[in-house]
Length: 229
Image (cartoon, rainbow, N blue to C red; front, top):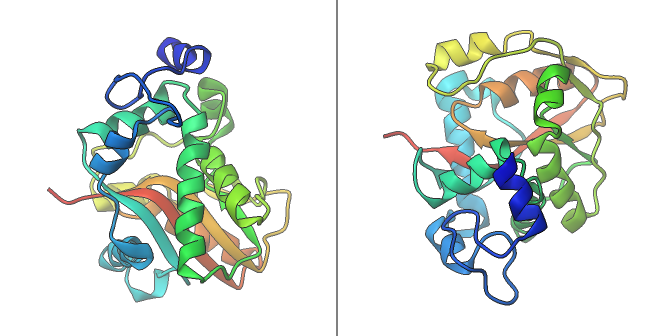
């Protein structure tokens, strides 16, 4: 958190490689964005995300549409940036990634939803972190697409442990009954947003609650997908 505060007060170095930022760069340098190696074209990341969902949960759980920016590994510069977003308090990174994700969605010309719903944190984890990284990503998406963020259509009912290192079965069990309907009704067409997807268990669980609350279609968007090693 101290490192994150330093970057907010003195945002002169890249959060991923610690090189000095040049004019026009913000938080992440151009070199690191290149090294993040985005999926080619607006459709490739979405197809990769759909494959992950189908592999782990079958055809019935596929989202209406899907988008993703990057393949993700447990090391490297993208890992450093995502760690800074999630654990070091550098929440403006969420807005930055969200805007890039919004540009990807807009380029696909398949903006078929009424609201953006970030995957919520449990209230105790929100107190611990002070912000929800998925909400920050959703805000960046909203800036680009002009579609509202609905923060209270979902609520995290259970304090779940980290998904890191868990098997597919354990991940699904970890988020089972983790979500419930929030105080806002679910819009008819929803885009669910998360930071990093490994098996898709969290997004699938969230989508199930939204459908049960009245959503007619649910799409997924994520910054990155964990690659199999």
